[in-house]
Length: 57
Image (cartoon, rainbow, N blue to C red; front, side, top):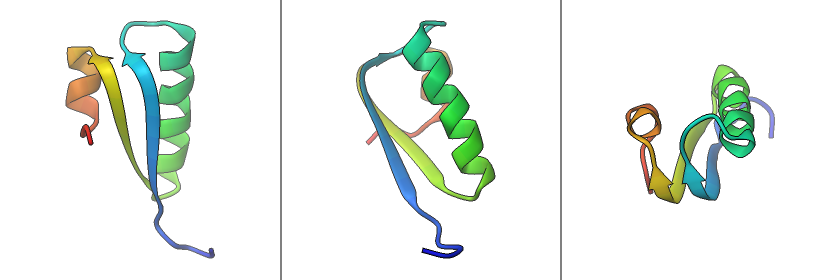
């Protein structure tokens, strides 16, 4: 794979608040984007903070 940029999607029923899943995904997004990858999400419930942070697909 080398230095290839990868698009990575996260799927959950919700990304909102400070629950364990949201916090863990935020941590992974930070690491992966720091490596140059593009992250996006799809979910049923998305808080305004997460909406501003990511594009939905």
